[in-house]
Image (cartoon, rainbow, N blue to C red; front, side):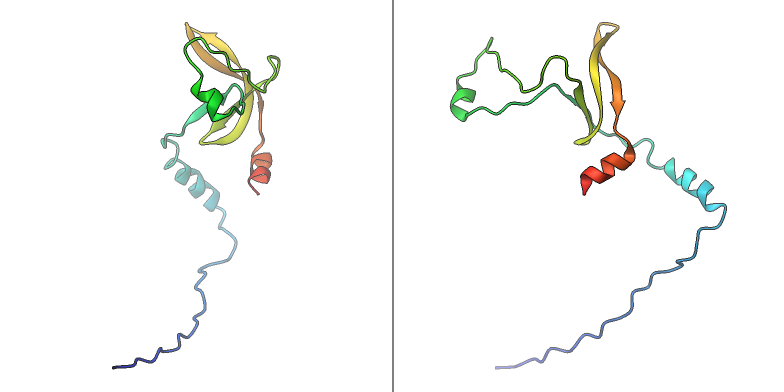
Length: 116
């Protein structure tokens, strides 16, 4: 039977690179870098309301069944981008298609606060 001894691994300092303030032209560089993400697709969805029902009641649903939601008719709808609430709005009709009119946009600071 052979035995091996584990060698102690020495911790190494992390290389953090340049931690100095960005040069004045860095803001322009960040704006150019933003172009990279502008064409990335995201999923925009609108939530009319929610409810909780038992599996028994779920299995009894059929065509014509009505499910009562927990949201009042006068309340604005929630608008999500990739599952994150970004705004509230109302349904409108545009050229015979449904649309969304934004009535309140959640500030970026508020969205970040909700993530924590």
